[in-house]
Image 1 (tube, rainbow, N blue to C red):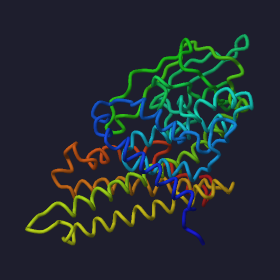
Image 2 (spheres, rainbow, N blue to C red; image 1 turned 120 degrees about the horizontal axis):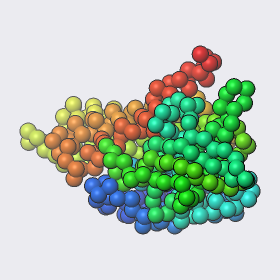
Image 3 (cartoon, one colour; image 1 turned 30 degrees about the vertical axis):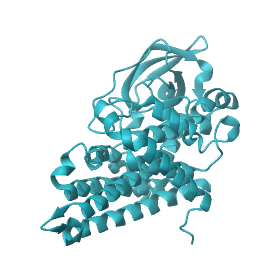
Amino acid sequence: MDFAFTPEQEEFRRTVRAFAEREIAPRAGEIDERGEFPVDLVLEMGRLGLFGLPFPEEYGGSGADFTALCIAIEEVGRVDQSMGITLEAAVGLGAMPIWMFGSEEQRRSWLPPLARGERIAGFGLTEPEAGSDSGATRTRAVLDGGEWVIDGSKAFITNVGTPISQHVTITAVTGESKGRKEISNIIVPVGTPGFQAAPPYRKVGWHASDTRALSFDGCRVAEGNLLGARGEGFRNFLAVLDAGRVGVGALAVGLIQGCLDQSVAYAKERRQFGRPIAEFQAIRFKIADMAVAADLARLAVYRAAWMKDRGMPFKREAAQAKLFATEAAVSAAREAVQIHGGYGLMEEYPVARFYRDSKVLEIGEGTSEVQRLVIARELLGSG
């Protein structure tokens, strides 16, 4: 058994870490406070090649594997979760559906700007009445004169309202089959008449990430914007989410590692009762537990990524990785704030931001409860 990254992967990790510490970390607090989506930083991440990692060179990518993408997400998320989720969602939810289900014409048309990081995109699944119950989709699309006419709304959608957003791929009801909704995926370009992105949400965390509600009112797109086979949208988005859960797990690993790094440094510097608090057993135990959580979460995430890269079934492993890593991240953020004491509540300290950012990890791309359902279903069958 080999648990080591290859020399090339280790070098890539060092490259991304150096970039994140040099370019992202110094601005993380500022963009969080302003709730500002930093277009320039995202474009710099694109020039580094992060958005094209899992895609072939012929589509503007670098031909790396999914493990490399997880390394990048972890390292960016280690210093700033907003930029980490921007990367994860842009690749996993924005570009990946085009790569996985698009025709050759669609791939060549939509994928290169996304892979180069010049544009970003999103995936419109969640609705006001359809969150974990994604089958309750109400957005509808009807064919009329060679065009899809779309009416409905989406909620909590990432990367669709920025100056560099290209499109959103939505789920929509396109008919009925045997008494059940026929759900399909349709590509809707930003700027299409009848398609509107609401102002950004005011969120507890991920302040510098773009998250909005979307509305469609008589929005018309070409019939050729159907992504994948008609009626396969439900199955397709489940496949997208399997990989996305591993990506969110990597983002959680980054948060745990960030909390650990900050806590170790602070414990060595902060003095109480005449000595560094790192010498007190209570602090040492918290840091030890955080290190255990980081290593176990990392092992779960990269096992799932390794399985995906080898074409192995990984649905249960993806759910397990996300479940463990995200719940461990919430605990790590809480303990990091506790180690920092009163300073942990001050926005000048990264652990305060990590504390706010951590909770959404247990919710986005499938709640912890849904992960437990997936794991149980894989072990026990449907029920």
